[in-house]
Length: 98
Image 1 (cartoon, rainbow, N blue to C red):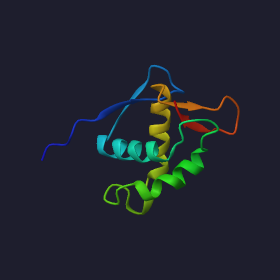
Image 2: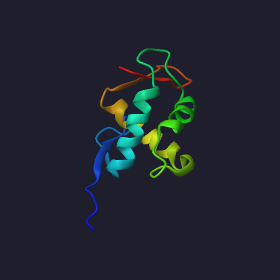
Image 3: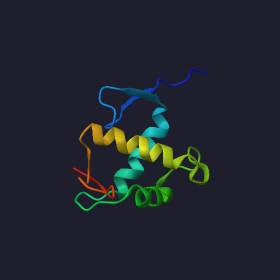
Image 4: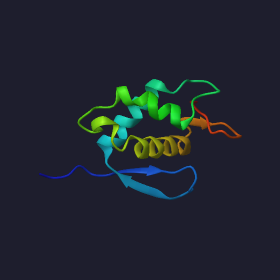
């Protein structure tokens, strides 16, 4: 059985660099994050996002929330690079949808 092609993602902290990731994992986390991240400041901290997405993740991809933290951060940084998410200018980091 052929594996689906990888998805190229960006990292706002590493301009011009891309990473190849599993599209199903990425899209599932992205969908969950867009459900919980508010559309205006002050937004949520990464820890708050990670906790809030858990009920929205498919258990076949994220059994018991496994690897959710890594995927949440990957989606956050990619979506910031694409201008979908904004970050607070000063710490602590807080994120909201643009």
